[in-house]
Every structure is written in C-alpha cells, then in structure tokens.
Image 1 (cartoon, helix red, strand yellow):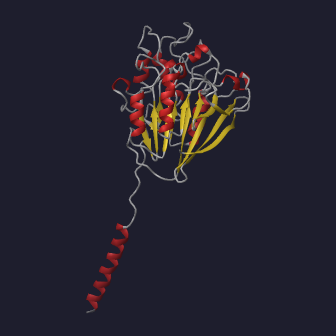
Image 2 (cartoon, helix red, strand yellow):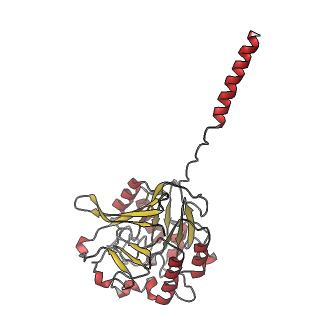
Image 3 (cartoon, rainbow, N blue to C red):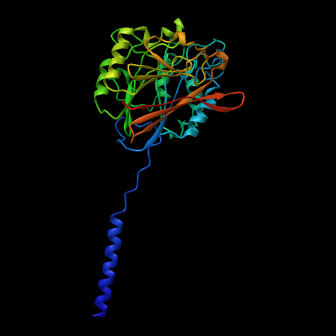
Length: 357
C-alpha cells in the first residue's frame, strides 16, 4: 500500500508539471532581417516606429561617389533609432546628371554600390541583415541612356532587388505594397507613363490596393509632392502636381479611403501640410542640394503646418523623420530631426500627432 501511495503521488506531480508545460506561451519567431513581402505580417497592437528619408544626390556635380556626404550622418542616426522599418522616397544618386569629368558619371552601378555602402548602418545589402529598408524610384533613378548598364536596370538589379513584386506587371519593384502590424504601406512610381502621362500614378492599381487588406493605418508614398511647396519650374516639371486633374483624382482616393498621410521627397527640404484631412509630408533632405524655403511658394490647396516662416538656404539641414504608430489609441505621431553639421548634433524640428483616420 505504501508503495502504491508513493507511486500515486509521483504520478500526480508529473501530471502537474506536464500541465504547466503545456500552458507555457509559444516562443515568438524573430522578424526577418530583410525587406518583407506584402501581406506576410499580421496586424498587431502596441507601439512601433518607422523612419522616412530621401534625396541624397551629391551637391557636387564632379562627385567621386554620386552620393552626398550628408547621407552618412542620416544613415547612422536612423540606425540608432532602431525603427521597425525604413522607407526611402527616391533620388538615391546623381544618376545621369553629373559633370562628365566625374569618375562615376557613366557608371550607375558604382553609384548604386556607393549608396548601398552608405546606408549599410540601416540595412546591409551584402549580408542581408539590419532594418528592413524599402526604396522607390525618383527622377534621378532613371534617365538618358549612357554607354553602360541603363540607369533603371542598375536600380532594379541593385538597391531594388529585394522589393515586393506585387505591383502591376510592368511596374514590379517600382510600385508595390506591404503590411506591417496594423498598417498598410502603398508605394507608387511616378515615372512610368500612365495613360500617356508621366509624373502620374497607376490609379486603378492604387484604388484596388486602397480597397483591399485595409488596416487602421494607411500610408502612401511617392517620390514627388502632390501639392508643390517650392517655386522651381525646372524641378516641378518632374512632379505629380504638373497634372492637376490626375493629381486631384489620386488625392480624392486617399481622402475617401481614410489614408493618414502621403510621404514624398523630390523637393530638397522638409515641409508638412494638410489637404482635405490628409497630411502631405515632404522629406527630401537626406543630402541633396537644398534651396531656401518661402511659405509664399506653397500651393494654396495645401494648409501649411511646418515650417511657418522663411528658411534661408544656409540654414537648411539634412535630416529624416520617425513616425510612431500607436495601435491601441489609433494615433500616429512624428518627430523630424535635422543635423547641425557644425556641432555634430541632431536637433528636433517638427513634431505632431494625429488620429489614424
């Protein structure tokens, strides 16, 4: 009897231990290190961040790299922020627009290799490790053919090699979407002719994406602003705003589908405004030559929110923005940073917080 009692007690202890083991939560798999294909990340809760930056051609037209030295501190600072992901809004290198004397004037692959090396603190293209980095094309990432690999071909084969391929058949790796937790990101290409017009988006594809796999947070990205913030006729020729009728259809689709914000670069400065409830955030100051800013040059269709006063060219700063997504409160906030090259320090500029719409 004594032996049976001891055996029974041991069996009960083993059952308790086994039961406790079966109730332990499963381990959470590590997130992938490289760019994430569309639809692979389930919606979630909590707080997380993403960074946005763009436009890093070297202001020196006789550059030896094709990449601005200003991108170096930007890349290091973004890496230190440790965001969930980063998005680059186009114009990586000088591309075709260089002094013929430059050693990389006709070598687009060398320019792209230099860009990938510069952003390696964020994402290491050689090892495939780091913060997921999504890129899109700008007007400097395509252009007149030279005596080497065409610029767009080089872009697709190097920096864009891991981008999602869920866009229209002739826009793969250029136009695409992906999800992360409770957010959907839609990236549009401005430089393929749609209905015979460049500087426009593939509206039917955008409409489909806005209607499918909707999330509490919807963010849209394109290289050029929808509403101009600078008076530069030559630069504006490459912008979505040169086709106001098509632009207005595009913007209405963002408004009607509760998009929280549209991010762009192209104009080499930071400017934020609102149109019909949607934020336009121009963030093209990752090292390209920056002009002065005058609020008088902002489109009257855009309610300017930052900066509200003039900025002299000498006072412009390279920088980036970090967006924090607050899933539980259905809000998103932003902190824009500018680099003081004289002191080697980062300065907080614009800050904001909005509902997800």
